[in-house]
Image (spheres, rainbow, N blue to C red):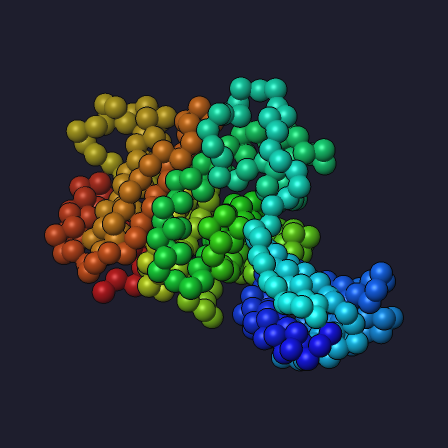
Length: 388
């Protein structure tokens, strides 16, 4: 290739080099095909431990990322043309160069498989799913929603509906965060098998096209190792999983959103307290069982009703989430509680969303304390939060 094309190629490759450096968590691979006459000479580039592994002509070199542009340009001098294909999660960049011109184009990565309605059940609704079969097949297969032939497993239809509806309910919150920050960091408390974490990772990076990072916490070393394996299989390098207690966790980076799905009893309070104590401004909680207040609260005017155990348990659920919401509002959060999924699927179907919007409100804190006195309860959340 002539000198003029080589100089222009170096400029394009320098930009690619910077992109790789900035987006290494999302990087997949680079393929280069040098051409001379009718012959192709392929080169393959991967990333290992923050350095480039460069395979070409039977040789392997380990290079710093900053050497990428110079190395590719030097080899190009001996060939008539080349095609560079740079792949990262969500997009692909092509650079074509010859003696006449150097061109670059980008396309959003779309899988070859297109969505086909391959189910025979009314349980898959006709709404527009955010995590689409076809585009998200690799993810959905890895987390067990789809079979190897791309069909929804019958016993996973409910799970698929749940995770997609979760994303739908918080999509506006995620879009607001993506407008406010260069990259979004999400902390999943009690992550379990991390289905939801992987789905949110996919949605933020490949649907919203926004850089993101995920941290999953769980006390079970087995599920942490399982989550690490799934992340590795998917190539989701922007994730880490820690075997730790929520109460002892200290973040080493800014967190923008805390989530917790079906954490039992006061584990939800621990997740909320982590967000409040670390000044994390947004949280989404889907509580599970509510045992704490069940044996604490009493209210004389309702004794004739609460003598029925099932009604007292249901009232405990309402009071627990209601007092969580009131305490958060008193601390300056805007709180909403919505129905997450149908109560026909599970009675534990409420989602609590909270965003820090202002300063503490003494009037609401007084209401909260008055309610505590009336019900004769001491909620765990108040004990866990560093109250001012």
